[in-house]
Image (cartoon, rainbow, N blue to C red; front, side, top):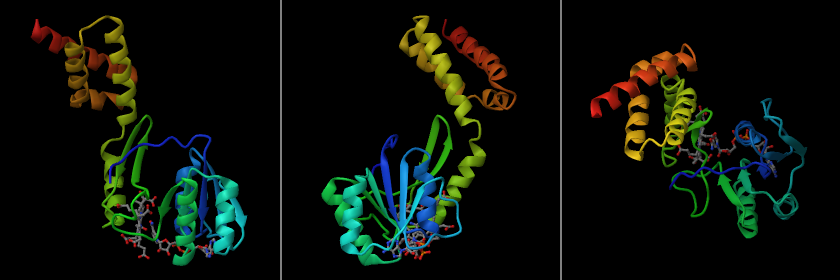
Length: 215
Ligand SMILES: C[C@@]1(CC(=O)O)c2cc3[nH]c(cc4nc(cc5[nH]c(cc(n2)[C@H]1CCC(=O)O)[C@@](C)(CC(=O)O)[C@@H]5CCC(=O)O)C(CC(=O)O)=C4CCC(=O)O)c(CCC(=O)O)c3CC(=O)O
Ligand SMILES: NC(=O)C1=CN([C@@H]2O[C@H](COP(=O)(O)OP(=O)(O)OC[C@H]3O[C@@H](n4cnc5c(N)ncnc54)[C@H](O)[C@@H]3O)[C@@H](O)[C@H]2O)C=CC1
């Protein structure tokens, strides 16, 4: 499986099943998409502002729900494998993506997997284990969150530097060396804790040092 980033802005995500797993998937996608969760009951969990519809569709009704909602993604998260099969088939017939929460390993060809995700905008880190150990995905996500706090700020800082060097017509090789030196420099990472302008100063020194070396 190959990870890709998908923009769900303005799309609908239809979740079948309102248990803890349906709630977790709803929260995840509600950050960006219109999420509708269909279930006869709902766990006492946060659903991320998703629309909750109390219903217990049978296999035919699942197809009607999918046709009506016209979702970009269907999440099958009920505890009923036959119903999840129906959701998967209906999604596939409409050309929607499908995520089976009750599947493991590599899932069926064409299905998507939800990775554990660290978000520090504009940075995203996604972790998956080929379905072998979701608990490990979660654990690694927690470690990355702790270790790479400040990654979003680093992306913004180096994004600014790239644009400035480009505007100043600095040649590509020199630009690349400058940005690489900044992202690898521990002092810049430390300075990010004191704010972007402090980090900017340290980064400017780092770039000055390397351009000094090459001349
Ligand atoms: C294939 C996949 C399909 C999919 O859902 O996309 C899938 C399937 C299954 N998960 C199961 C169990 C658990 N899942 C979690 C947690 C997460 N599961 C997530 C993703 C995925 N889970 C996909 C593969 C990702 C990969 O490749 O690693 C995460 C990363 C993302 C998310 O869901 O948001 C989220 C962490 C979010 C975070 O915190 O960052 C925990 C941990 C916990 O609860 O503490 C447990 C209990 C411990 C354990 O079993 O490991 C079971 C068994 C059910 C049973 O036994 O009945 C199945 C089905 C099966 O394996 O048959
Ligand atoms: N992918 C993952 O991370 C994980 C997946 N799982 C799998 O996902 C499934 C769901 O997990 P939980 O939320 O813990 O289970 P759960 O049993 O708490 O929730 C299942 C939900 O589906 C609903 N449901 C039943 N019939 C339905 C219908 N006809 N239409 C719509 N909804 C219906 C139930 O009312 C309930 O709200 C489990 O069966 C398990 O196989 C479990 C743990 C983690």
